[in-house]
Length: 274
Image (cartoon, rainbow, N blue to C red; front, side, top):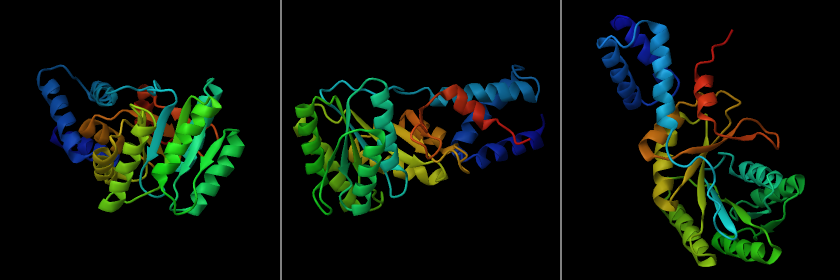
């Protein structure tokens, strides 16, 4: 394993959308182990790399924290990341596990988003509270929490408007949604899930940092991993912000939102085309 080997090794890792800084950290540790005769040959290096990647993903709480009555989950992210469909799929998962979810269509900036979530609510057979186009999204979340209490629902899943992380006034409005949620029930929201498009690559990092500052993000949902996504950015976001990945979007079907399983995710990074 000469210098050329390690140079190619680094290039392959960067090509999976791992950040250069994280690649440098991992390679430095592997080369140190090699120098101390703890690694002998590419197979042992690959095994050690699996260990390194698993260690990066082993942060935070992997399951949902749903302690409130009702609990509140906010889905946040940029336009087109897959928030609306993820909200509906999550509602289906929770309903099938015995929960009584209620959807909140708090993306009031895009009339089509309200209609889309209402259509999904019918498909997954979950009640929904909708706002009017152009209305106050914080008010929709507040009303949904009140409705959940009246209906006996135990978890509200709110789809918020897609917003560019570079627009300060939009991020300020998201912060308002979080504050109003706390008025509806002390301690709410229980989870703020940042939905990231898995094909975004390293652009996911500034997104995650800004949304975390505005909305106290507690975990990630990474979507569109059935396409050309390489998934390496997940490791960088997790390392930099200490955010666990809670769900993965692997398709367009109702059941194509699956819990994150770090071992399987890391193994998929090593899958080679035949």
